[in-house]
Image (cartoon, rainbow, N blue to C red; front, side, top):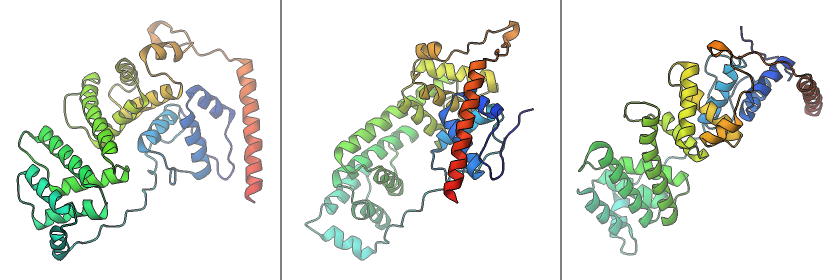
Length: 316
């Protein structure tokens, strides 16, 4: 039966636990285990969800973390709400001949094929005034949202200004405030859109809209630079282990390969081999203990113990 080792105030671990972490060969998993020892949970750990879940799955696979879901990282402080523009504010903005807002409103009306309501104009003015996005960037944002809506719901369908505003806040948080950055963002979103469809095919998933967490995983794998064959290898290992698709477990496999610099199928075959022979029936023979490895593990644990004692003394 797998055990977890979560001591009280002492930040220490057994040699057996250290050996399991060495076997897992994941820097994120080792860091997460130390964080759990120190804090007893994941609160305050500022990791993206995909990274946290990958490390957590690795620890669970060796019995070094509880089965229940640990607390998620603390959410960031909420952004201050945008100002509540009045009808008079919008009227003055539309009458300002020195402003580009009147021309922007007219162009957005033309692209959406409708007259903008008072609420629509307030949403548009929020992008223009509160977020201070340049007019050209707002038009690129509108064009992207129109294209996405037509792709998802069919030709002729147009987005609401509230949807455009939501995407605009996302762009602002990413610092997309120039034409060049907007072009890069649209190019990346277009590539990911194609990648998502391709990933469904690779993972034998019936075409369907992806939930946000699935999109985050695919975006992370794309950012890491894995080729299709490596993705398929990780998927096959996931199915063999879990008997069904498990996004978190598969992400753990890919993160481990990424940490080793293995991003192609050929690199994985060369650099991620388990040296233990396979017995009949697919059962691996237990690895023969290596005295040198055991000695190094004991030395590493002794250094860690001394470091932890020093840290405790400094805290006091």
